[in-house]
Amino acid sequence: MKRLAVMHALWVGGLCCLPACVGNGRPASDAGKEAGAQVPGEDDAGIGVWTEPDASWPDVHLARETLSLPDGYVLADGGLWTAPSYDYARIAAGDVHSCALRADGSVACWGSNYYGQASPPDGTFVEIGCAASYCCGLRGSGSVTCWGQKPPSPPALSFTHISMSAVHGCGLLLDGSAACWGDNTYGQAKPVAGAYSQIATGQSHTCAMRDDGTVVCWGDPLAVKSTPTTDTFVQIGAGNWHTCGLHADGTTACWGDNAYGQSTPAAGPFAKIAIGANFGCGLRSDGQVQCWGDNSSGQATPPAHLVVTQVSAGSLHACGVQLDGSAKCWGDDSHWQATPMAGPFVQFDIGDDHGCGIGADGSATCWGNDFEGRATPLAGPFDRIALGSWSSCGIRTDGSIACWPAYPKPPSGTFVQVSVGDQHVCGLQADGTVSCAADDYYREILYPPSGPYTAIAAAAYFECGRRLDGSVVCWGADQYGVNPVPPKASFAAIGADSSQFCGIETDGAIACWYIGSSVQMAPPSGSFTQIAAGYDHACALATDGNVRCWGDASNQAAIRPPAGPFIQIAATCGLRPNGYVTCWGSYVIPDP
Image (cartoon, rainbow, N blue to C red; front, side, top):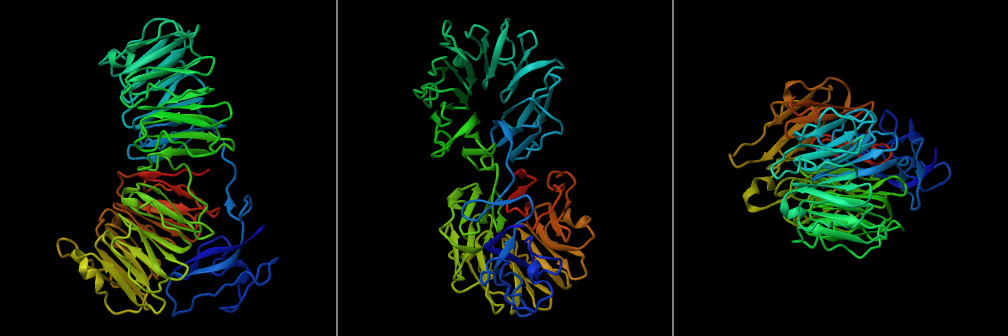
C-alpha cells in the first residue's frame, strides 16, 4: 500500500467515506485511538491529522488525512490517484451519447441513456457504429445487434462492415455487395449494385467505395450532387448531407451541402478522417486533430496538445482514443456525451443535468449542461461542493460559500456544509445554525426553524435539516403553498433531490417524503450509511460499499446500479475508492 498525503476525507453521519477508514468510521491508522489524537502517516510524521467529530459537530466535516491507496492504484505526478489503464480500441459518437469498443471486444458507453443507447448488450463485437439515439455492433459471426431508440432492424445476413445513420443503416456482405435497411424516402436504402470495400451512411444518402478507390453515392440529390466520378480515395465518411473522401496523398475532398463549411476541408495532410453531422475532423500522422465546419458547440475545436490514434465525429461533439487507450471528447456535453470519465475526486455532487467534483488540490471540475455557466466552476480551493438544478456552490477553505452562476447570492459567513435548491442556497455553520439566501419568490426559505442542526438537504423549493436528536424539520413552500412534512423519527442521514427527500432512520429503516410515491413502495432493508433521492427512485449506500436502488419499475436503468464498492453516492452516481465517478440511469459514465 502506498501513502498519499493531504487528501480530503468526507464525514457523513459520523462515518468516514474513504478507503482509509474502517467500519467504525475512523481511519484505519486511528482505529481504537482517542478522538482528536494526531495520527501521522507511517513515513511522513506530522503530516496526517484526524479530528473525529463529537456530538456537538455537524455531521458533514472535511478533514485532512494521510490516506492509503487501494491495491492496484498508483500515484501519478502531482499526487493524484490514477485508475488502471483504459483499453479502448475504437470509438463511435452519436447525437448525445458515445460508445467505445474495448480491446477485448466489449463495449462501454457514456452520455444520455434515455432510450438505453448507453446500455450496450453483453458479448463481444468487432465494430460499432452510433447515430442519433442508438448504436449497432457487428459480432464476430457477422450478425448485427442494435440497442437504443428503435434502431432500423438489420437483416439476418453476415456482414463484414456496417455504417449507421439516424434513419437507415448499410453494411457490406462477404462478396463486397451492399445491403441497406430502414428509411428509403430518398432511395438511401437502395444500394447501387457492385462490390465495395467501404460504405458510409449520411442522413438521407449513402456512399460506397469500390476496390479501385472510386466512389458511388445514392439517395438525396442535395447530398450526392457533385460526387466525383474519377477521383480515387482510401477512406470515405458521410455527414448529414455531405460526404468527404481521403486521397492517398493525405488531402481531402468533400461534396454536397456546404452551409456550415463542412465541405471545405482543412488542408491536411491527414492519415484518417471522421465526418460528423455538419463538420469533419482529420487525424494527422502525428496524432494531432484538425477539424472544420460547424463549430457551434466547439465540436470543431479539439483540445490543445491532443494526441489520439482514432477519432469519431457525432452531431455536435467528437471523441478520440488517446495513446493510453482512454477517451477524450470535446464539443457539446449537455447530456454528458463528451464525459467518458470523471475524476479523480475526493467529493462530488450531481445536479439535474450536470456534475462537479473536487480534486485532491481543492480545485473543482464540472461536466454536463453548462447553461448560464453552471458547469464552469470558479477557482478554488474548495473543501466541499453541492449542486442544485440551476447552479453549483462550493465551500472554500476559509469556510465561505461561492456559487456559479452567482444567483442567488449565497449567504455570508463561515460554513461546514452547503445545500442548493432551484433558487436558494443554505449553509450550515459549525454551531449548528443555518443561514439561507433566496430570491423573493421563495422567501419562506430564509426563515428556518430553530436548531441546532447537524445536516441539511435541499429540494427545489424546500430545505430540511436534521437536529441533534435526529429529528428532521422542513421549511419553505412550493407554488401551491405545500410544505413537506417528514416522518416523526430519528434519522442518521438525510438526502434530497429536486422533488423529494429521503432519510435513513437510526434503526436502519428508510423513509421518503414530499413527492415520489413510487420510491416509497418498497425501500430495501439492510445497513446503510448514505442516501440519495431521485425523481422517481432513490439509492442508498450499504455498509459493504454496494448501492441499492428502488423506485419506478419502468426506470430500470436507474434502479440497477453496478456492483460496488463505492464510498459516496449522489443521484445515480457513485464515487469509487480510486476517486473516479461511475454513473447509471439517465446519464452514464462508465467504469474504466
